[in-house]
Length: 212
Image 1 (cartoon, rainbow, N blue to C red):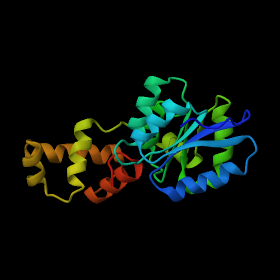
Image 2: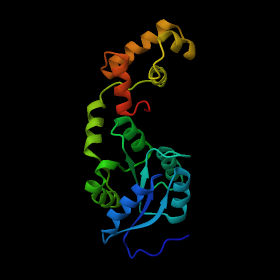
Image 3: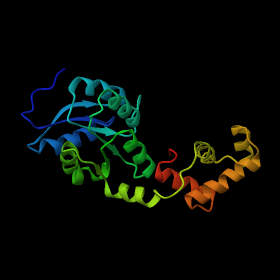
């Protein structure tokens, strides 16, 4: 179904698996004379289909969704439409989530808790060719930009540590020695500024390095 003409207004596609969030965004957008919601999607697969169909000016994309998450949907959309202007919406302030989104091609990154305060300005800014990263997330990025990133193997080790398993079980599961696991943990602690496993896991989840 093709959207009705919007008279030069900014054409917006909203993508979120929660109807109430989409309704909340619509309420904010509909109060603006220069913006129109032209379509909605409830998951990443629908997002790609709707974008192909509608070619919106700005897309508001949830980060965590069923079937295809926001990052992967963004990747497909940007491959097909390199000029797509996508703002990622999330409940997570973690810098790694934001970094992945920006590297994939997002031009904005907003916390859902700040939508009423920032959404309208963000839409106008990215539509005009700019970028908009929520201040809380920008601060997180700036704070950790000089730190060494965890390697893929270190992330894997920490993900298993997060399940609460002891080093002996982790070693068996990852097919490495117990001493190697402890060596990985020592490096992980140093990179994250953590003193214990619990603290390392908490920091990694907050920053989006591993999923909750």
